[in-house]
Image (cartoon, rainbow, N blue to C red):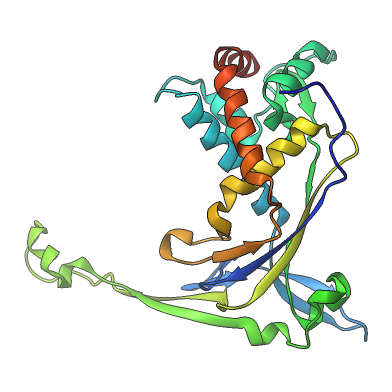
Length: 286
């Protein structure tokens, strides 16, 4: 995208304020979807279990946003990419061959032609390339996390005050108007089920950071800003699980003002180098 120049020192503080209940799953117990928690040692030596959003979830959301933007900007047609190339874009790929030699020329082409891979990290052929992005968990702003939060975010409210459960019923269609389309006659067993989901309540806030390693260049910084703009358009993102059911809507604060301009820069670069980028992705996906 540009000549290689160091990225600015990057420490972007992000705060997500929930405008709908949030769920980040740790499996199920019966019909209950359990909220994921982590153990946090308190000042008095006790251990608290506090809900959070994992760094892996944030990284995946940013990578996914960039991958879809790439697909749309390059006009990639349906059923036109190898499975390995799709994996490369959306999950970072996988080692596909053995060998002990690193292809430095390929790494340089990736860095200049398609820097999102250099930002998030990727695996291709026999190489596993470490990305320059570092993300933290997004932790609940609560009393139990006081020692992990910036001083200006400290609060006396305990984590338990933000926890709740959402209840619902999965209706049996045999008892609805749609039941007239069922082929069998007579008595059939009901499939109606009550479910509940452990959540963090609307109004709670989570805090986290994204940073770049000293190895990052300015292009990777541009991609990071573009990814944040895509992840939270107009400052709104959907985080955690069950977002299709209305969970996890949040207002995101802390995204730098230049993120929109960075997205425009990335888009222009993708459009200007469409053929070269597609060729490169095809080579990496072999």
